Length: 287
Image (cartoon, rainbow, N blue to C red):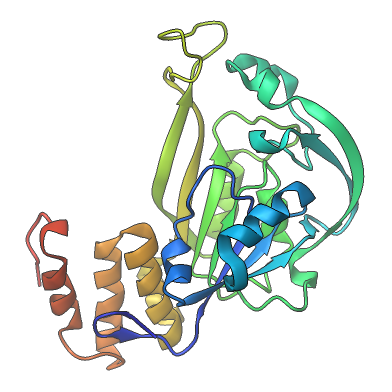
């Protein structure tokens, strides 16, 4: 599989999306599926979302209907499907009241007792190269119970809250410390969402943000200062993720140079790569 000029993969990239409901976004990994360079392992316990996942990805995805957490029985708090706020954690009412509109978004229609699984207990699941999670505060618990399946993971996309919207939700600081302890470092924010504080509304639209940070999607990557710990195949997959999913051309060059040093790709490939990017690189090409 040729993922860009001069770079081929021997095996497909294994993607994983936990909370894979296709509500209002095109995931950054979709280009890999469209080009048949990857396979998606989609986890969605909310049965209301399954058909939309099938429609979006077809045979490119294996769908798991498990609720990933810590393997215990938990209470599921079901909000309306379009709100995206169904969670294994109870909503934090004072935080919802703080933001315009969130009392309605987080309104619970009903609860249900569900049996959760740990990520490491899903035997059919291959080891994962790229993980995306958006599961309303339960991300850190899933990560802590999935070390084996994620031992080769190259990058992780997480939704993090700046003000926790759920009871017992880990803070960004807790998540960041744990990610760093596992050999990951922050790479980039895909978005930084702000919201207006009750009762102030701008332009008669409560969705017009003020300055208060609400949540962000952040990409963590394997420490780029320790590429020597990765195999050639991992480096090739890492370069494809950097180029196609993150638009991180400088990270891609950094990885290509490591591959060149190992004689795993032709010498000077990173120069050819930069030259092909053209206007997407507004600064000098360097050495």
